[in-house]
Length: 301
Image (spheres, rainbow, N blue to C red):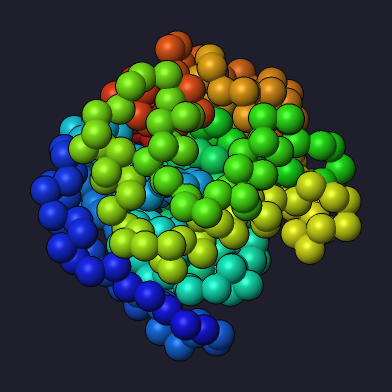
């Protein structure tokens, strides 16, 4: 596996993101050692909250959420998925698979950080990966916050807007990451924020991860990840693990999943599931502090 590493100077002077970068190496049978970047906030002995981002963002997305969780006494941990942020970037689209991304985050959270009693927060691909981790390692978790995400199996088609997004990614000669994040927000992002989303990718060679992810979403019943996701659904719906749905009110991509998850997950029964107003797909950008407060109350409760 050919790995690329973003130069550190690309991450200089990021707005409102003064968190100390941390790194760890994952042993991978296909690529030797893969470096994963992450940031933390809050006390090291606080209850851990694992914040997983999605496509095509990175841990910068959680910069408004991290301080809220830290102030609540929680240990907030936001890694960059392999291929994103400060993490190493496999240089070929074929290097990415759903199973590999689940395994990379499993090794990061459990083999390296040895996390237990974790509250998962998953948005977009952060949920697709994180919900698999919960289903396959339920004893490691104390709760789940699903925020604009789902767990597709390919048995139900994705919404038309998602197919347009996939087509746009596949056809773009230049994948403008900042512009795609802006398209998923209700608020107008300053240029320096859009630049921060572009920072991990000096040129198109570094973007195999963002380009690969839409094609890894199961959209057919016989997709390589469909069976594992069906098994995860079967496990998740029977878990008593508290399961909070914290969706925004304006996400055309995943909005329809909120009522499905609330009905299907045993751990969702009896909880007060918030709908975060005025926020799009990237609700961390549009309403990060509000999302952080909901996460904090849930994780502390």
